[in-house]
Amino acid sequence: MNYRAIQAIYLFEMARTWRTLLQSIVSPVVSTSLYFVVFGAAIGSRITEVEGVSYGTFIVPGLVMLSVLTQSIANASFGIYFPKFAGTIYEILSAPISYLEIVIGYVGAAATKSIILGLIILATAGLFVPLHINHPIWMLTFLVLTAVTFSLFGFIIGIWADGFEKLQMIPMLVVTPLTFLGGSFYSVNMLPQGWRTITLFNPVVYLISGFRWSFFEIADVSVAVSLGMTIGFLVICMAIVAWIFRTGYRLKN
Amino acid sequence: MSSIISVSNLSKSYGSGFKALKGIDLDIKRGEIFGLLGPNGAGKTTLISIICGIVNPSQGSVSIGGHDIIRDYRAARSMIGLVPQELHTDAFESVWATVSFSRGLFGKPKNPAHIEKVLKDLSLWDKKDSKIITLSGGMKRRVMIAKALSHEPQILFLDEPTAGVDVELRKGMWEVVRTLQASGVTIILTTHYIEEAEEMADRIGVINKGEIILIEDKATLMQKLGKKHLTLQLQNKLDAIPETLAVYNLELSADGRAVTYDYDTKGDRTGITSLLSDLRNAGVRISDLDTKQSSLEDIFVSLVRVP
Ligand SMILES: Nc1ncnc2c1ncn2[C@@H]1O[C@H](COP(=O)(O)OP(=O)(O)OP(=O)(O)O)[C@@H](O)[C@H]1O
Ligand SMILES: [Mg+2]
Image (cartoon, each protein chain N blue to C red):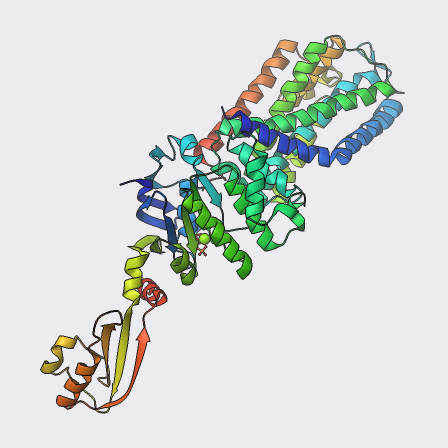
């Protein structure tokens, strides 16, 4: 293992994060606060409780996941897209490093950033509503798994994209709808039967459900299924990344 | 004997089906400065990119110091420093940070003294804390050279290193290159400027349309450069060179109104005096004459000209 190279990439990417620290923290915190105002206060006054948890508290895990998902994708896709766009990727490709090391560096940094953000949002939420985390270890596990998985997913998008529009397209057209329809703001059990079945094809449902379970022990699907689906998605992303590097797709041809 | 880079039967077809390299065979000797010359689109950058691992080859193999670039990529790549043709740099990092980053990427432990030396050699020391975006083009190119030297490579690729660098700094750059060679580094540089290859390289290779069409020691090439051509304009049209002049290997122009004689300025005798008297004896009258020295440029142009 070329640990120094991993460290170099990781620190380089984190330096980028620190440079833009303010905007990368302020904007998610502001938007989360807005969600609280809109969903928590406005809707929360009509839906008082979901499965025994006050509505304001109920939406916290979903909100955290929403940010972690979008931030992971944004960080990782930009992190690898930019060197490709600026041409500096030549150095990464000509260095004595393996694909695994490149991925660990980039995805690790992207995931770190979104995990930090997730925790900041959680803390912000704590200012608005009382919070209790039943299974902190599981909470962290789901957080890390999700951050890593979606950073990998973002990495794939960053390699696939050959323009800034494409970089924005997948997050806009696929990920945002899936997260909003994935039970961030409601329990899937509140939906009519038909919709509930359709929703089960949405991978985000499993993430949010598992994450929410670690807070309140209430879940739309069983925790084991959530965990399995998350890991499954992780494995799919890893397989795609491996294929990308093996074939040199959009990198070496 | 000791070739440090060995390219054999290397071909590259880009996605579009375009064949950029066609069965390249090339050996670079340890410690030499190799000048790769060729017109735009000849395949110079493609060749370098494959050797450095940036582009996948379609066929053939390359080994660096005995390490195959695919099977044994770590060992192969860690020997190489690359300065690409295009100015690809980060924008917001400092010079110091970006050069140190390169060293880390190549798995070398931190060595501030070495980085300092590289930056000083390239006259970048006073810019070490500047953001790259604030540098001029020539400075950026030197930053890229510093990045390539940061990890102490045994082989250095310079893909048109002097594009956009002023004369003064160009000299400084060549000095760095010479010092590197003296310390045992093998250097491969591409250029469009023949004088540059002439000045710097020990051996010169010419590539055109994806094929190597000439590899020669510079000394041998320069000997060819010693050749001069004497062109004699004739008063009367000649149908054939007279028998008596056969020893001179004269070349008759298509219109029969001029003959060309090649001679070696470095030889003991040029043969011009006897040629002129023999011409008079044969009854050939001359209206004008001029001489011309063939340059590497001529050789180059005649080599790459479409037949
Ligand atoms: N990524 C690519 N996809 C398709 N064709 C390419 C690609 N890169 C280069 N080519 C083509 O391959 C040929 C060789 O290009 P290359 O860049 O190797 O030339 P070069 O000798 O370095 O030229 P120059 O002196 O202009 O730098 C050119 O015809 C070019 O158009
Ligand atoms: Mg080129």
